[in-house]
Length: 458
Ligand SMILES: NC(=O)c1ccc[n+]([C@@H]2O[C@H](COP(=O)([O-])OP(=O)(O)OC[C@H]3O[C@@H](n4cnc5c(N)ncnc54)[C@H](O)[C@@H]3O)[C@@H](O)[C@H]2O)c1
Image (cartoon, rainbow, N blue to C red; front, side, top):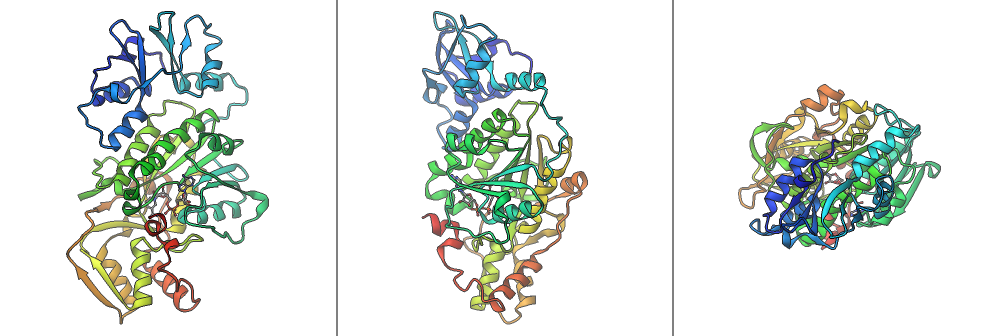
């Protein structure tokens, strides 16, 4: 990236927070220096500090003074330009001011700029269009979750070497048929920078699936949610860039569209109605503004998932209504008219694999809705699918306490660009879960907290 005039990277302490973010976005460098009128350094503000403040609903009228980091790491202007990159890498910072003997900011050094230089010079630099094929190593962060555990077993079956980082928030998960020679499990917290550095060693691609998922679970402890769902993502992508990871796939969500009466696609305005969706949007922005040319991130906005997994969930609407219908013979649908896109667990995993195996130029810095346009349903349609499988169930429709989310989504981009379409529909999951309960005697403990993120965390 061409060097920015240092004066464009300096703001005064009275600058309002939104104006600071605007300046950061304009420069394309992910931070800005706060100086007094004589350019003497007072602090630094990174875009992550601002996004975190916005997520925590800090007063927008406040100035950057309230969130800047004082006493930041600096490099003295007396250090030679050849030595500065080494100090930056050692400091673990993204952006560092170069200051003169009076602590005035005279220049800066920015990690993505020097990584590009290092990679261009390095004879081992891989061509960008490298696809991620087995036996390359994939790190799945959150790989013991509902989606992750199925993805991991698929990747191992396909000959990938797979490493998983997961905190096992919802208990131990047994993956059947996974060859331990190809699979490594690390129990750890992805908010911990040292842990992340360690698990990124020799990794070709990262699939990031960690999130406090679901609106009620996110509301339990908002600060913890922001740390996990937003701040950790920001740190992880920075570490991925430093470790020269080739690919990064981020699981976002179609819930960023919130309430929207039109059919929405990747160009449509987001309209989040929850902290969960706001964190997704801010994480997407952080990922897309990485500024490092040799990094290839892809954002997948997943439809609502259904189906069976090694870490089963019954707090997702298709799974929940089906298990209640078969176990209790009656269901309640709230509202019923709201549109929502759905996709099965195996299809999501196939979609993620498709992205990894696609040429980088098709997926780099791209957002794809991941689902299938045929799988948009009104909630009442799930009731109809259940009635077909279980004609004797009682179905009550309640018009109170309706979830405000309503969105119908176009999945034409992922179909036209990557050739992805879903293989399974909600009717397949209804059939599978009913037969798992009735014929295989599974899930008779479906109310157990481990199947419900909110109940496990509260
Ligand atoms: N399930 C859906 O319907 C759906 C829809 C849209 C998007 N998504 C996204 O897909 C991703 C995966 O969803 P899921 O349904 O598999 O969720 P999940 O809750 O089953 O899995 C999340 C995993 O992350 C782990 N985890 C949580 N905090 C951690 C931490 N700090 N460090 C390490 N591990 C941690 C948990 O132990 C769990 O195994 C999430 O990003 C979610 O937002 C899911």
